[in-house]
Length: 163
Image 1: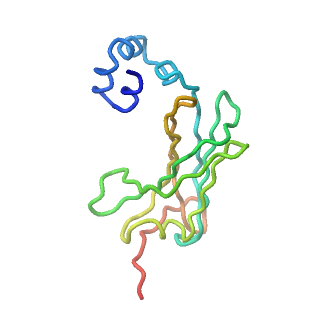
Image 2: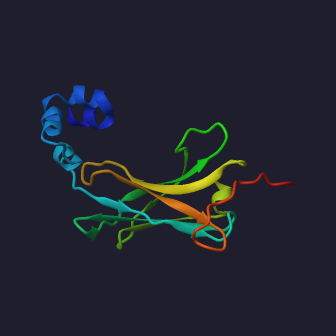
Image 3: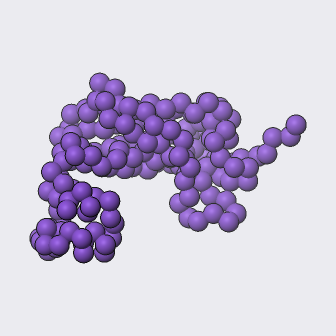
């Protein structure tokens, strides 16, 4: 039953979970560790700066449990952008990397945000996600992506290459 709850979200999860989920929610909420038996984790990312939108971009995310690094867990990375016809918070999956002994996963995007996003879109940030598993709970985090000569400038729109 708990495996089914893991796959469902929202009201469907509450209905499928029966009294376990209802009891958990009625006690002012609870962490996934109480529902799934996994260890709680924290995933952190920081605002990231790139000089030009076409420069290689290093994305990092740090995974900890009880304040200590967690090694060997897969972290998914996403770039977020805005543009015509896109829903708010649109994101593009850009890769997965494992955490090292320091708990940090590192992904380098060759060609920067411009190499990953559609022409006309403006990169706004990136996110990292550690999927839910039986041993360690899921977690996610987002941060801003900044471009230009200073670390406080928003990125320009991606331009279409002229051949």
